[in-house]
Figure (cartoon, rainbow, N blue to C red):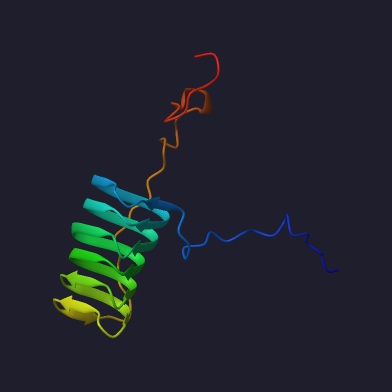
Length: 152
């Protein structure tokens, strides 16, 4: 009557609350960041950020982007650009120059924000999740991206 499931059978939710990638101190990156997961930036980044997950700008992080879009954003370093996020936290060492659209907003004493804050009941992040290959592409024709097979 009741089915007992083992831990292997239970679906494991993908955590959007943890860091899965790090841009370390001393690293300068220019380009676009997108995808699903969490990233911590301790170096210098310039470009566009669209992450379904967590973005942490560490104390040594310096980010310049026209518009940062993510589910959760924590700023302990410096960010120049607008932010759209479900949750935004600016720590005491955090500095933000730009406008904010968010559902939840928190700051610590000493945090800095130069811009406007607009609180909404819900925000549209406008983050597209694109598949690596087209759905009609046969399995054997899928290109190997970023991997090398033994014997090549």
